[in-house]
Length: 164
Image 1: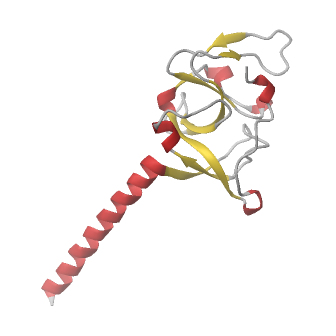
Image 2 (image 1 turned 120 degrees about the vertical axis):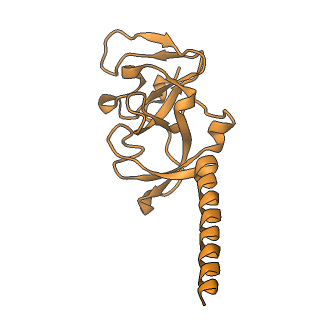
Image 3 (image 1 turned 30 degrees about the horizontal axis):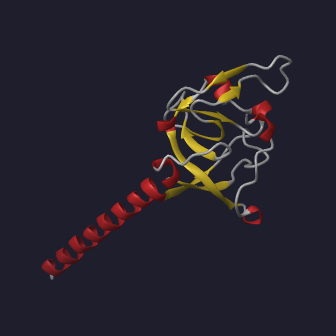
């Protein structure tokens, strides 16, 4: 009796560890679901939208200008940010705000990307903290999952004119 219960318990723990390892690998190397909060990506992604962030593009260095990415915040490593890639290494990017009279530009250094929110007037992004290292990118957002009426591929940037 005791031995049968012990065998079942060990078997259950073994399966739990196996499935836990599979789930960890899936979330770490394939993708994850992310709940976005804040107004910086409106109107493309609004508060409490759920998106799917795939990790394969990041691992294969396939991030392109215009992609929306999930990255670690350069200020707080416990927090993730959701922004659009506006410049890759070597690109010339506009560093001024939308209402600035004089436009300023800079170049993105090697191994970095320039990120901006779609809601330029209400976004803390690379215009505030500069280019971020490519290594801080966690994944590329490819689908909006929630709410159901807006399920699908994400829209183009409302700020396409800012991509040089």
